[in-house]
Length: 215
Ligand code: SAM
Image 1: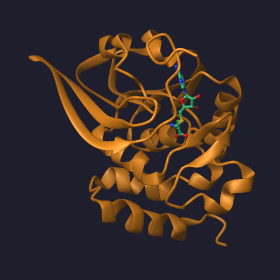
Image 2: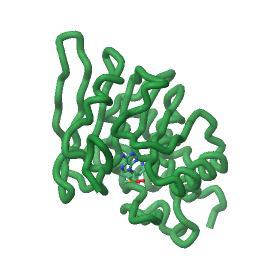
Image 3: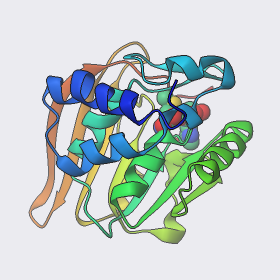
Image 4: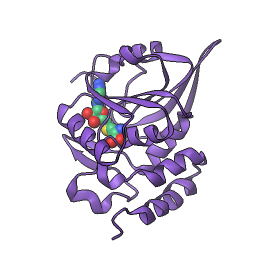
């Protein structure tokens, strides 16, 4: 096995991501660069580039590569963007966004996952992600407004504090629905109001917090 596993990443991008219609070159490049195998638990490193989610402990998962790619593309990330992620998990989605954008603030409610994500981000050489432990449904007003907000857990509706923390022209992408099945939703904050668009069906673990699901 090649130590850097660049060949496996190139194959993953071609066969799982481009083949399903993701076109944004910055997104494709980020998936080719970020070493996903550094973000999965030791016992699953062999499966790091497979076409499915992987358990990361605490009943949570790192999403399937295609889902990371499509949600990143829907966010329309730009160089220099200030991004907020709710649900750090492994830190992989944050690393993908940090490769494209200026800064990523990522919020995780489980302290042990936040600690592990910080270690993985450091090992991967990603310096522009700040991970905080908190209820991400409240957002992170200290570093608002955000050009992009991504929720990587299933939410019954979009938490209102997140809409408030979105910059003019900002995009918010989230899986919205029940705890069993959701659809990807994108909100864009336009001068005329909030534009809402609906995309593919997905299945995420629940967003637990004041404006998500209650424990
Ligand atoms: N983005 C992650 C990655 O790249 O590995 C995958 C996220 S995982 C599917 C969902 C994460 O959301 C879990 O780590 C879970 O603990 C976290 N989570 C759930 N509710 C949350 C909340 N209110 N605030 C912050 N994190 C939350």
